[in-house]
Image (cartoon, rainbow, N blue to C red):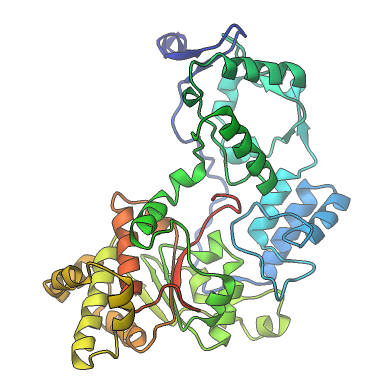
Length: 441
């Protein structure tokens, strides 16, 4: 009775005579979780290796038809193939594995998208909307792929099948009945293919609106805004080659081992070229400590490649005071050896407002900044010593920097550090906001 009253009092979006009504169901923003089989163990000190290979193969074998699984693995992230839906890490042009240019997460993602199970009218006849609202995202995803178009009609508790011609007509009638194209919003996701996204935006622009939000509005919006206002482009400024050539890579608010495992191959290559890595995070993540590359058995047998040279453990959202503390100490070093720390040619020719910025920086108290950040004094000084002698610096970040009320300010301080060092627009240097999906931009 309570559920019926809630639905009756919920505002609905009326259709144009098709018997369709979108109703906000009585449910939370997050689906329920099933905490089963939880185990408490010691923190891991390395990522990937043979266990990741075995896990990937088990997912492919469980969810995909065997023939399709093999074909998919040979085409994933290959020239003439298709992008992995697991993350947005770019494909190398020089050294690309013919068999496994992907990671464990990638196989898990593609195993769900290309799974052999299908669902259609019989499935939805058995399961109501209210039933499925109680399922987790994982449970929903593992039910299977849609085998036919479905529609939820006004007052119905279940989806029902609709033919493709009728579905197209329904959509067209709704759009054509609008008084203005701007009344429509065309949402999409980075999970779409490049080709589908290109056609989609052509269709929307031809329809007459630029209402094209996507999932990037929920993740790197603060990156895009801050970068646009500071360096003039809302995207990263580096390539894979830059990561290989960097003298220092700073990783902030990001755990490559979990979210971008293929990035660890680039970090490994940077280390082999003599580069250093500074990791900044509230927790020591296994993926930032050591990488066991399953494609390099010799390295794997020796225990893998240590990644992080300096770990700065900070409080949650302690990034701005940490960055200011680092820049303040760099300023002190610059006073001892003018021109040896900051790139003044770059600063004076390519930036503006630096005088006011430095005046404000000099007023900061290092001890206050250190306390606000939570970082250890000796580790901060160690990082400053590493940075003061190098200019090929890349800063990588993800949701740990963007998902704060002060997310834009976080990115501004990242850019300030790079500008002081002249570390933007040069080989081996720049900004690297690491995206989550291959087509998110």
